[in-house]
Image (cartoon, rainbow, N blue to C red):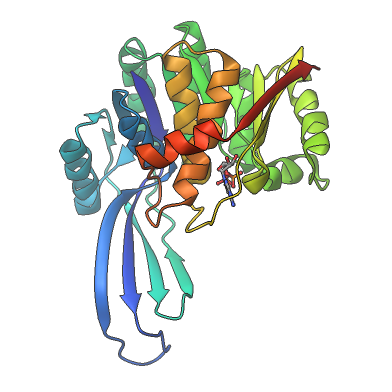
Length: 310
Ligand code: ADP
C-alpha cells in the first residue's frame, strides 16, 4: 500500500465565468468541487495506476466532511485525523478568455494535541505501507520539523519515504535523511539561493543534498524531463514533446509514478521512467492529478532513460 500525507488539504472549487469584473454581480455558468491538496492528487494517480492507497493529514468541519466523502467514494483508506478547525477552500476562477484567478484560504490552525494524535496513529498505518509520500505545505500551528518526525517514524519501520515540499518544511525535512526528495527547478534554486536551469546544474545541486544525507534526489525539470541522482549514479530521462493542456499537478503525478514503481519493487530506471511518464500524461489533461492509461503507455514507448556513474 502507498500512503499519502496531505497536511493542509483543501476543497478545490472552480468557478467558470464569462469574465470577472471586480465590484459587480457576476453570473457563474458552471462550478465543480474536488478534494484537493498535493497528497490527494498523488493518491488519485496511484489509484489510477492500480495500487491500493491510504490518505492522511488533518481535516475538519463541513469542508472536511466533503473531503472524507470524496475519499470514501474513491475507495481510498481514510486515515485523516479530525481537527476542530475548518478545512480550507481554494477557489479558482476561470474566465472564458483563458484567464485564471486563484483565491487561496490559509487553512485552519492545528493544535499540538491534534499533531500528537497524528504522530501516535501513524505507526499503525505505516506498518501496512511500502512507500509514504509527504506532499505540500504545513498548516498553521504545525512546527517546521513535523515532516522530520514523520520521516523518522517511517525509517524505523523500514518504509520508503518520498518528500515533496518546499521552504522550511523542506529544509528541516531533509535533516531526517528521506530516501527520496522531489524538488523542481524553482524549489532547488530557492534552497541553494542560486539559479538552477540546466540538467548539469540540477545534478550538481542534487549531489550536495546527497552529501547532507538524502538517499536520492529526483529533480523534475518540466518539459526537459528529470534526473535522479544517487551517491554513485545519475539517471536521466528525456520525454517526448507534447501539446500541453494543463501541467498543474504534474509534479504530484510524477511522485505517484515513482511511489507505485517502488512499491512494486521495480528498479530505479524503470521507476524514473514511470514517474516522468505520469507527469507528462497529466500535462495532457484538463483535470489536475489525472492520467489516461493509453496515453501513458504511448509516452512510455517514446521516452529515453539513460544511466551513468556519478
Ligand atoms: P512540478 O509540478 O513539481 O513543478 P514539473 O513541472 O517539473 O513538476 O513536472 C513533473 C514532470 O511532469 C516532469 O518531469 C515531466 O515528466 C512532466 N512535465 C511537466 N511539464 C511538462 C511539459 N510541458 N511537457 C511534457 N512533460 C511535462
